[in-house]
Image (cartoon, rainbow, N blue to C red):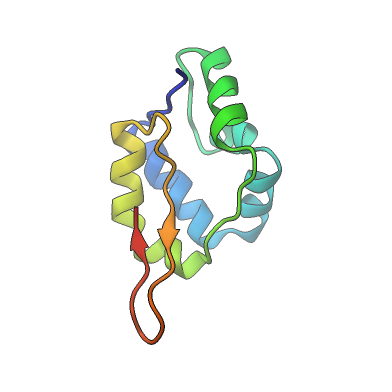
Amino acid sequence: MPTLQLEPAVAQNLVNLLATDDAFRGRFTQSPEAALLEAGHVPADPAELSQFVAMCCASIALADKAVIEQAHAQIVAMLSSGTAYTVPMLENGNTGNSPRTLR
């Protein structure tokens, strides 16, 4: 089973780019593997990274930049502890002013 675990500095950089850089966000949705490498990830096994991207990143819809920034610490913690098949997702809050929750 392919996994993904980023170094904390790489996870920080990735989340910062996803929260601020429209061009990077476009590159990430087009090629998550290339974007992960651009963010500084050096895979121990490039084949495993390719498998992870193929299995877990087939169709990506990024959250708004502000939502990613709001969940910054949680996303970094998840990416640096190892995701396996757990892909960060934001749940839509209930109607009204309910916040989104990271799951």
